[in-house]
Amino acid sequence: MLSRVHSAALLGLDAYPVEVEVDIALGLPAFSIVGLPDAAVKESKERVQAALKNSGLKFPVKRITVNLAPADIRKEGSAFDLPSAVGILVADGVVPPEAVEGLMLVGELALDGRVKPVRGALSLALAAGRLGLRGIVVPADNASEAAVARAVPVYPVASLAELVAFLREDVQVAPAVAEAADLAAGAAGAVGDFAEVAGQSVAKRALQVAAAGGHNVLMSGPPGSGKSMLARRLAGILPAPTVQEAVEVTRIHSVAGTLPAGGGLMVSRPFRAPHHTISDVGLVGGGTVPRPGEVSLAHHGVLFLDELPEFRRSALEVLRQPLEDGTVTISRAAASVAYPARFVLVAAMNPCPCGYLGDPAHPCRCTPRDVLRYRARISGPLLDRIDIHVEVPAVPADELMGRAPETSSKEIAEAVGEARARQAERQGPERPNAHMAGEEIERFCRLDGEGEALLRRALTRLGLSARAYHRTLKVARTIADLEAAADIAPHHLAEAIQYRKTEMTA
Image 1: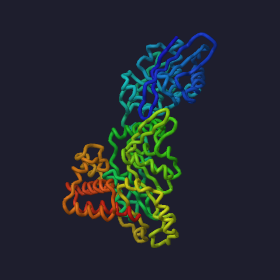
Image 2: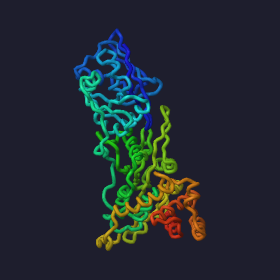
Image 3: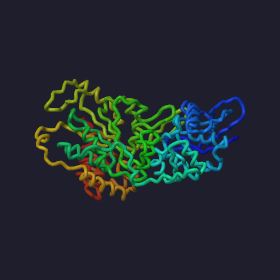
């Protein structure tokens, strides 16, 4: 007898339909899976057989063939365990065929029949909605995540026996609902408050500007000056993500397998801080079957690269595309996928290999050649894509011990939120100043005569590129938004130029 069960597979962030066909025929006992399965799919034969027996169900001692259609696309992962097992039961007459019509099934089977979570449940639920199916069956641990889609009814099951009873209408399974309490799954958020950082008023101001306009930042200073502390607090002053942004972030982390079990919508902006030994693939994504990298896991959040010159040169150079376009395109023989990667880059570095160049309290041991070689690890084109360059000097003893009251993250976040609101009203939602295109720059970043003269002198003396010119205008627009100014004044532009001037000396 032949049976057909709906399922789906992931390709990038999206899912495409897969029809699991099961044929049971007389002959020598055999169990084969066709349709370009990878090793994990091939191994499902043992999981399915053991799960059926340990769930008190009969495994047919016949010739069983499972086909995953379309057969010309490689299938990977363990999500086909559940539809394969149910397909066998339908073909063997244990489950009525009409029970699985219009129902998508995904899930990994444990040997004792438990249904274990899979990656990409949110994308799979969205695919079920696009296909017009009547529902999707997911592992219980994926229920909150899949219910966020609100595309089709989501039926959570904890075991194969429970699913069979549900399909035979022996028990009822209530569809999962995305309750407000479930919408809190957890990206690694910011830790601490800006009020805890002593001094560093210039760096704090630079990070406020960066958060208000979505600009990239490079901090340079000696060890222990507070660069990491400042970076880790940036996510805390960014505006809360919109529902659309939260869904995008959740999909990425679900596909990557970094979403906590049982989690729902990620309601905090991600903060990613990869170690400087990370590979190119780990940073931007890749693999035989392309997976998202750190730049995509930081989408709509913060990517912190500490000790920037210590990263591989090749890894840093592949950052150019996401910094410019907000996406990463990964091409492989098996597939070509594009992952979103719109993040705020916060990088930190020392001024020299020993870290104490220009520090009055510690002598620098580096030669000029050592300093040049160290700085040359970061290419000019990459530096050109970083809007704000700021020095973070060592904190003087009186500031460190005196501890005058500092501005809190809450106060900074309120100013940032007001500036973002002005940008949304002017440019549209989810389009901060850093994302303005050429025509928008011409419309919203106009200068008066004094401002034009100031910028012309800066272009000549600092040798800024055309990209740096436009980025300086966008930073100036953000500074004006923080002051609720309708136009860019000369002092707004002067502060923006100062952030590029540091680039020439850092």
